[in-house]
Length: 231
Ligand code: FES
Image 1: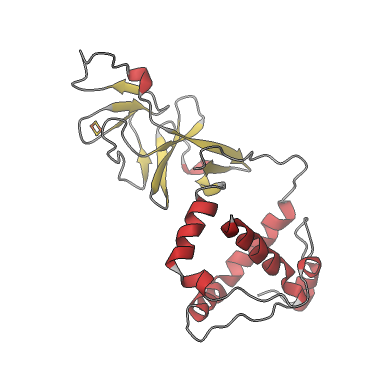
Image 2 (image 1 turned 60 degrees about the vertical axis):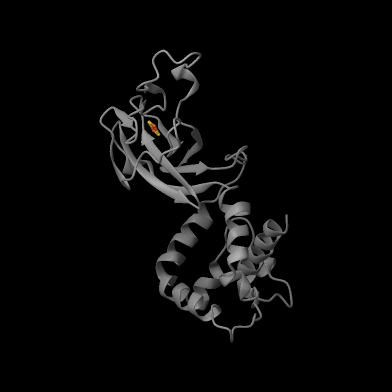
């Protein structure tokens, strides 16, 4: 945990906690932590809409290296191409929709092969071979690549968006460095407290409590979260 003197130094580069706090700000009601309907809304309106950070590019250093990431019902293959580019694809076959890859991570040896009828894709997503489709009128392999998922790269991270029309990742003039450093340290130090907090708010006895002026960022985060869910 941070000492008071450390907390006083905290600045995100965007807004100071004390500036984000407003008198009377309360923590969220308990249902926001345990209600299945709100969990569903979170998936739809936050995790399937905004950029996600599934991992680092260094996890897949060589051509064909991949890892999977799950979000709600979606499974995504993040893979390094022969050209060195990091791409992401929905983990489903264009033939009958079978989930192609079941390993959490590994290396494709030049191609991604569906276990059902052996449709075979390049690590760039192109459909290279489609068994038993020869002679099918109008069938063109070029029409059935793996479905791409938007990817962005930042500071060694690979980020992805499952939105149909992803919001721009780059925000001109945005410098999150202070916030990144702060939250990285906070997450490392506060993991035990986060787990205990989750256990407490799941209790029927939990009631919202007042935020202090030092917790303005948390209060602002709650406001942003509620705005997203209200849409
Ligand atoms: S479902 Fe993948 S090849 Fe048929």
